[in-house]
Amino acid sequence: MKKALVTGANGQLAQCIRAATSNYPELELSYSDKDTLNLENEEAVRKFFELHNFDVCINTAAYTNVEKAESERDKAFEVNASAAGRLAKHCAETNTLLIHISTDYVFDGKKRSPYVETDGPNPLNVYGESKLAGEKEIAAVCPRHFIFRTSWLYSEYGHNFLKTIQKHAGGGNPLTITTEQTGTPTNANDLAQLLLKCADSNSRQYGIYHFSNAGEATWYDFAKAILEETDQIKKTKLAKTEHYRTFAARPQYSVLDTKKVRNEFDIEIIHWRDSLKTILTND
Image (tube, rainbow, N blue to C red; front, side, top):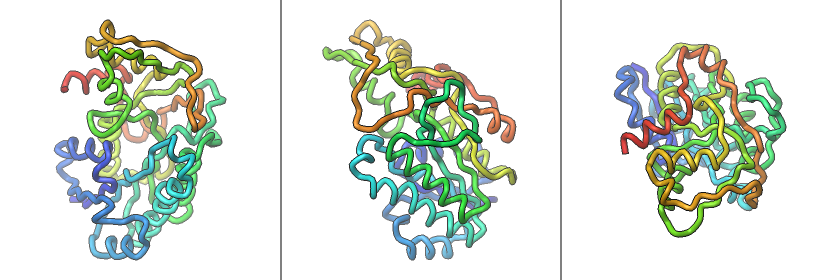
């Protein structure tokens, strides 16, 4: 049985991993939050890894507020880069496989076909910069790593676009959603399944992979689908806008090519709208 640590225990992805563990009986999972493992404390990380003999670490801890990152640059880089590098260092020293999550926002969105892993990153905002810096920190110190870039994560847990739209559905105020960005909504439960499969596997094809659900959409398309699937579309004033002002710049196109991850882990990836239905059906 493999012993696996999941950091960021209170986040939506870690909660999705918890929900999926019954499919992986050969994994013994432990969870840590900032109170039990402070990734910003070098000595705490060292002692934690010396005390527990983990085979795998799935790092879901992250600073994910794209807007706030613009004014909290140091904090974003501490969590997404420095802490990731610190974790990678101690994973390497204890021969622990590191599985880490990155983002489509490492790209500038100037491409008009899905991004492959070998495309050059060029982030437009602090969040993307910090996540790219984390990728580099990990690669520099920990040879045994998998980095999964993903996009537009949502689930039934935590704070995300799905929960926001559900909260405001049927209200009196118009919902104005941008059509300016195109990407792929990704069900965090599907990503969780991949992360557990990776942890359970004996793959040595380390490096960067892209994972999202299939297809592409604008944020407006995503909102419309949520309202349609929950029978709220006629009760909600949904409007589209080409220009929605935000503090942080975002890539206009950030669809990810998933061929590499599908081939390596022998998985089928369903369309984003079909995956959305699985969450809404279970609500």
